[in-house]
Length: 282
Ligand SMILES: [Zn+2]
Ligand SMILES: [Zn+2]
Image 1 (cartoon, rainbow, N blue to C red):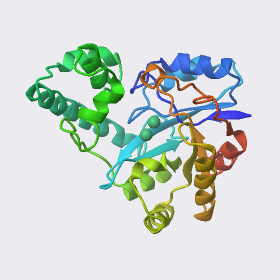
Image 2 (cartoon, protein in one colour; image 1 turned 30 degrees about the horizontal axis):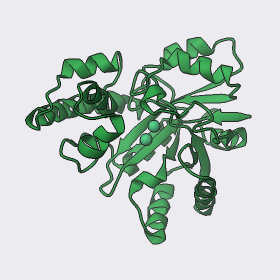
Image 3 (spheres, helix red, strand yellow; image 1 turned 120 degrees about the vertical axis):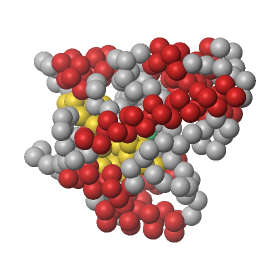
């Protein structure tokens, strides 16, 4: 059985509606699909409806960007039951932080001679939370950049001229809240942490594990085989379960498909079973 434990829909920065993600997962014969939109579980109802009567195991989740100085630390949280709860109650605040940040980016782009409006990015995003990929798409459409990737490389990425920070949870707090919610926190795509030495990585994983981290995303779409093996070994060394997913965003990540990534991704269902054993009441 193959599963996909990291995906985004239109309620954050993916291009496919939650129901379409479910249909694609069923068509491709996936055993399980986790919906992990940024800071929001608004897609859950629609996805759950679409999954009714299918054999697909649909897992409610979310992806959080954490406060970490040296790079991008993302946390994929699985089996987070939608509704009130320790972590769930923070999601609205995090979404509001995105709105403030988007306004800041739009203002900076204006100063840099690339005027766009908040209305334009809202329209690009449709319903749900609005993020930098939507801003990048508007920039590309208006001819300021050739494509979304370039928009990030030149202007929107961390440390670039139009970058703006936003409200984030600290890693220890996010992990603690996830566990208190009965959910399973997983460190996403560790290459974005900006860590360059084995010692630094070991120190970090020791801390994260002590705070309650359960998994580390090792089987990731952009990783080559030796990287997937390396990160899986690393996870096991620190008593973490290797997890995996495509980080599917629809047309916002060209060529990346649900379940199979760039063609060579296959996250085994056995990892899902291991992860599930740490979710409350599963
Ligand atoms: Zn991420
Ligand atoms: Zn993601």
